[in-house]
Length: 369
Ligand code: ATP
Image (cartoon, rainbow, N blue to C red; front, side, top):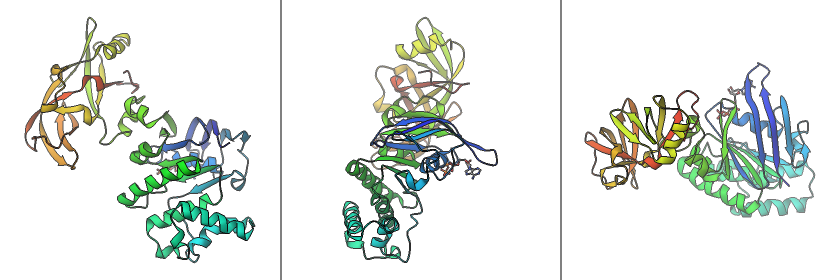
């Protein structure tokens, strides 16, 4: 069993800085958990507390059924992979992978078997005699993974393991890590500030900000129903568009007024705003770029949501086009079909998909609907 339980975990550094505040999470066996958030939000600190490299100020950490707050890192049955792979330069790939096992006095033939098995999984068999300097970045990263695999740990901890690789290699390694997870069936906790990595790898994602867990959910749920403005803005690329709007209730109908347009909400969303007493108040309207459509793609059912603006930048990405424009004082992005005829400088009509509109409380920044 490699479940983990984090209960009311806090970390205050000796200088008084509270890096992690009341972190609670139950991790099931075989989960691939991602800690994601901006720089300094406490991801690495939390991971290092799980590894035993950082003392837990208060709270309880369990691996399996055992409380491990005071257990030495080497006795926690975990393996950690860091962003700077920290390979021994004078040793071959084989010896780098065997090193930890030799230290633990594992019999030689056993070491040989384990190293070769890991090399096979990671496609390193032909490189076992090479030194790290004769390897590419991706190969070095695979050796670092191999060193962790041979230990056959219950839990893998990975701290931005791909951040030193170029974009193409990162993409390939993402797939490798995903396959590795399926193959080994081990619990993985993975820290990244890259939300693409988070979305593609995680079975569940923990979004953190300023030492506080904001939301824990599957990638799809986080994307579709973020719990607040922070998560909505952090997950998704290009990021969600935000506009300040005034809520106007008329009977059982609700319109969000922004920049001269009155955007009518579907009944279920309208109900939430009515019940919340938002009539006349300023709220934040959120709409993802793919839910902002240019003219040929207008949503027939909501023609009253049309807005008009001049394209600031047209960006062609091959499979899609990003159109950047300003509306009601906000910078907006529409992600549209590449066959669009809109170009920089054109004045274009856009419609929001009303079903996909998110509404946030301006003060608490919590999601209303
Ligand atoms: P990054 O993505 O930049 O690595 P992170 O989310 O992993 O960021 P942490 O490394 O966990 O962030 O750091 C969390 C906060 O704790 C930061 O504000 C950092 O400056 C602070 N911090 C880290 N180590 C110490 C320390 N030894 N003493 C005091 N403050 C620290």
